[in-house]
Length: 112
Length: 109
Image 1: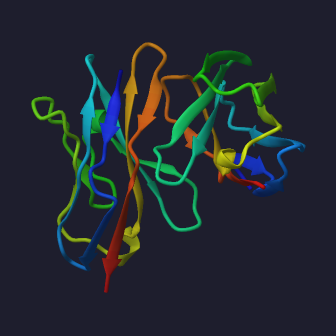
Image 2: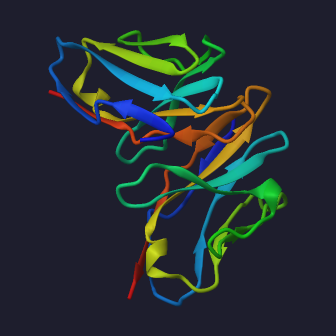
């Protein structure tokens, strides 16, 4: 699969679990993003990384912890989540912040 | 703060009928507006942007600064246009994208 890939595609976890979402792109992009898509809500930007540095955190609770080890990979570490965190988590990347964002297929997360 | 409003959740039309998906925005600066589309079982993808002034798959959208609108239009809908459509605004030096809630377009045969 080319473009932006995300694994796993589906994840069910308990509130005490620790899990990680992975996003990967080999498009040569320098900016990567995490979005949250909940039912009945607009797509919400969570984090932005530009050249591996976090440049934006939209007041996201600390139970979500992003990591960007290099420009091609982005992780979202999850711990002690709440049922209301159940959503589709989308990753996106762009060449620069000003360029078009390309989206991954998303990870459907269910917190029990 | 910027905001994107898509007032309708669902639009259902017959094939060949005209389509207008509404989008209004609020932003104090000079906005850059986009329409994204998500077809069934596919990822979210860019459909068009206002600065390009192009027609993609028969869709056009004109930025109306007076009415702060960026409605998406197509004169004759096709069944393959059925999808979820999101209006988005890019703002500020950080180029943050703000999305509307989206609208489901259903085109019936």
